Length: 95
Image (tube, rainbow, N blue to C red; front, side):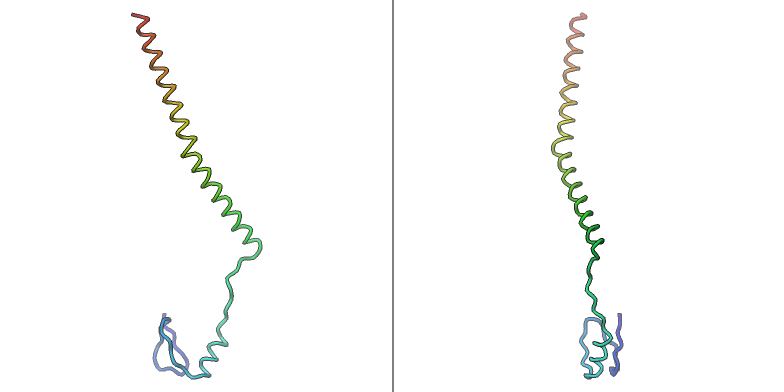
């Protein structure tokens, strides 16, 4: 982006500092509107709600991955091994 300053004969980039006359600098400063980036109260509450939901989701996922799913898989394996053992016993008893 190129910025052309009053009383300067060449374009000035955003990252360069131009030496300009005092009246040009005061003109630019008077036209410059500095507005802080702030939330309204309802936007702030929405942002807090978003962070809360995100955090709860994160900890629920950690809980599921470290406890519930391994418990579920382990229980299913134990039950399957019991079924296989019972099938073998039934097969031996039949012969």
